[in-house]
Image (tube, one colour):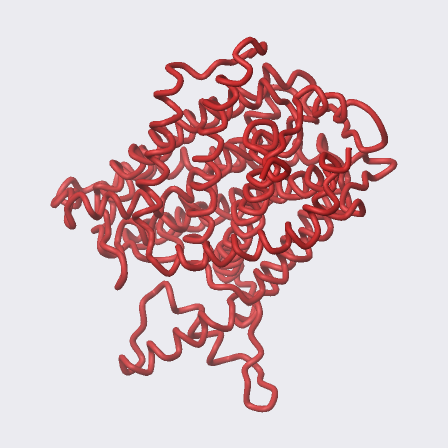
Length: 502
């Protein structure tokens, strides 16, 4: 048990990040970090999954106009955890995010578990973003007269379910399933089986992967451009949408009571995933102790204000029960007959989710890189490109894995699994702050979480509360994922750990 919970000293972590061939290039400033945070947060959550949270479905009650309260509830939980992340990021400015923090405070086994869990947040979360990006891009191309076959923009399972739904209702189908139904009807087949795979999602993931291999600074510049575009589009949505707001659409405000708000908060949490991805850039920041807290908390505050404003306008434009579509913001303009505005929003969604893809695809390889440098994964994954000074091996393989899953995965299941994995990681980080304060109270901290242990404990409680709003099947999948990860640790990481071998 002592071996399993051995901790890596902060001094050793800092020394290792600054020396040797496995160091990364420090090229990012505070502005770059804030833009990375906004780029990671604003994406598929506000452009896609908000629709299901508002309208609900057969398994979940919708929040209705009360989705505003869902965003507030989620923002409070993220704020508690964001304060904890900011303290760790300034104290342990090392690549690896929550994995590295856990290694320094809770021990190797917990570090492995959280590193394995972060795959759900970054890599699996990026699968959901890639799927949503493909749907918006297909719609955008159709709007300008460029026809892309539907069977290249959706997964087989969604297409099959849409075809069954259409058959049961004599051809009628929800608007959100129209693309999937078209894919099933028009796809070529081999031996009677339709050939359906999301080639658009695969293409954008590999394009982003290539950009990330070139360098962090180059990626940050592209991200800043995309962030500027999506903020402009959201400002356009708010300005143009206000003209179509009907106050009657806000009544009833809580059509399914507070349970709808609770379940909605568990779903829209996906819209906040990403502020912690900023911490993975620690080894590439010029002044990490200063820049990382600014990036984490600054991006969280900006995005919360934007989300609340968008939710108010969206639910005022369209009756809440008609928003259960894959592209609710664009669909809101289509509902009021503003087709040109709908097209502009679709363009913004494509840029927005491209930025999320970039930042998430930036974060996951650095988790693998840190785990490999510690010996918990093969040393092959800790290689750094001799020219670009980026972890090119883990970046490439992450891109291949995300693209492969995005070609066949269903977005609803992916979103729920991403949420529960991220909430679990947030809770462990909050616990880690309390543990490190107790073990090393004199350690210099550029940023200190206020009211410890109250704030971290509120963060843990908030995360558990949101996790309980997810279906039991999501818990079962998450448990299976953790069991698989522990099996891999004991078969390889436990034996090869550099900390245990000295």
